[in-house]
Length: 97
Image (spheres, rainbow, N blue to C red):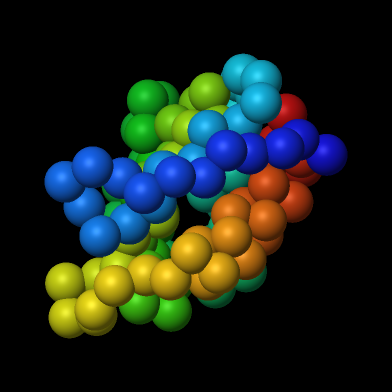
């Protein structure tokens, strides 16, 4: 499994995740897997996928970089919750390489 550097995102109340190596994800396949797990797809094109689940918005790039941020109505996002969400995403990333 890949490791990820998680840091607060400038200009957002969310966190940016950067894998330790470029994953070259197939976003359409990833989006399908995430939809099966309860994520709601907002956008899925070759260069970016945006999904929602449990009040959070996830922006994912083919390299494996991602942004997790709270929805418009939610407050902030704790580091602990962001870490849990990042670990969940990494499990899906492993299935889409």
